[in-house]
Image (cartoon, rainbow, N blue to C red):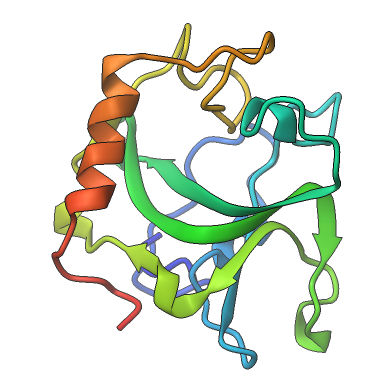
Length: 176
């Protein structure tokens, strides 16, 4: 998707997802809502239906975690491979899917929220930062954590590179 604010005529057909190719909650990850916030969805492993917040902040036990950097990735059409499409800074992340707080999105869920001014949606031309799949990256799940299950921090070059990119980014933002 170009805008991630609901279906747009300019968007390409859904790619991936197997038989799950209907419009999902992630289609609205960068739609500024009436309350000035963004509500983002990501689907963790189908079996668990929960985000492991302790893999973001070791020993965390609450149902939500504040001040998290959430980076969204998507498959790049025609070329393949996953790329960074945008991020939320200072987001609140929820262990379980939350119901949308706005009545027109009653059937949609979210797992992260942030004030829209704390988010960046890269233009199509800026979505070149590659994200690997496999060990210490994205696997069959759509989530990659910053810590291993034992609480040790992941120190992998690709992740460090993306964190530096996000921190230094001052380019165009499709949300503005």
